[in-house]
Image (cartoon, rainbow, N blue to C red):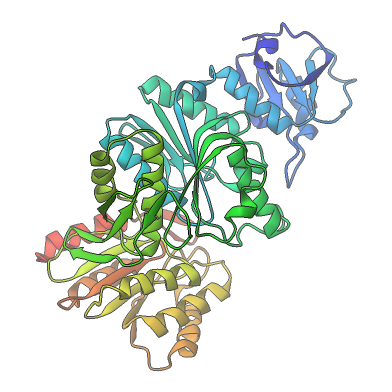
Length: 496
């Protein structure tokens, strides 16, 4: 592709060279420099890759895309174009390189502080129940038509994002569904993408600090940019930040909630708990815009699952889906590592969740308490080389709210598990000096202990690792997928 075609839609100035230069690919990592490539120089939070422009030119790259002036005296043969924002330019160039695949699919973006991952999985389940072929991108990785791969960021860099959209389209996907982080918006990873539907879940302080957002208001403002880039916004009317977040929005709005005085899709304040070997969920009554009511079952527990379901219903209705696939998809929706039931016994319930800080642990335990278990047992540890405050907080919460705790390892990294557990115990002593617990440093042994000592009606929450498929000791990662390990042990020991 000629450089001029690659730059379609990008404001630029030709500094030297020719726009007829043939470009075979785009890079932003100087280590990949080779003839025929365009190197986009990005000003990052840690380094400015303009420093590597001369090295890339020496390796024969076809073009350099720069954001600020550099010394070109040593690279007379390379084509150079200057842009106002190289991240923005790379996003549009990447879309052009891969044939603008997002324009050929239904695009759905989900933003918010909590619930993005669960909501995208719910939407995917509903769309697939309706016969749609969906590609999904988010915290848990990339999924499309039986394929899965990990991602470094919730919202990948623009080049990887456009490359993934191309893969979706080539595989036959008609819909691309993604989590859109505030960082993804601020750093132009989704620049140039127009969404058919944008979704807002909720907002609370997060990602505020060096290299992220300076203030909560800035964080909220970037989240709101999604609703200047979509046709319809499906938004949580109960969240106190919704009005401010939507300032300057250009899309039509569809609202959902429980308490707001006027919403399009409302859930009843009272909901029913569902618990059996295959499900830990809720049922609520939905009121639609025309006043019609119907009962909806969700295969995940808690009030937050109702809000995520309402967002999903809103998306389904905007896309014209029938009720049957919406309800079927909500019942079957599963998010690996997020309140994920492992159905091994009729006697007790065991689940896996990614909760790995105080707030998430408290929310999870309070949700599970609603199901009135015989005992609420929590299996947990804390990550090594991370803040001790997390250990104190999780220990305090579990001591207060759980009936029994099994203290074990998480990803110890370069710390001793005994030292981490000692910190957790400090927090437990503050929460409840009489809290019952046992220490089992090896996490596999801890899982076996939890199953061996389970009592009738127990609810066992294995938290901290969730969807992770490894255990990190001394910086060495080894396979460790809890769902499979639990299922294997149950089969070996004949758990019923």
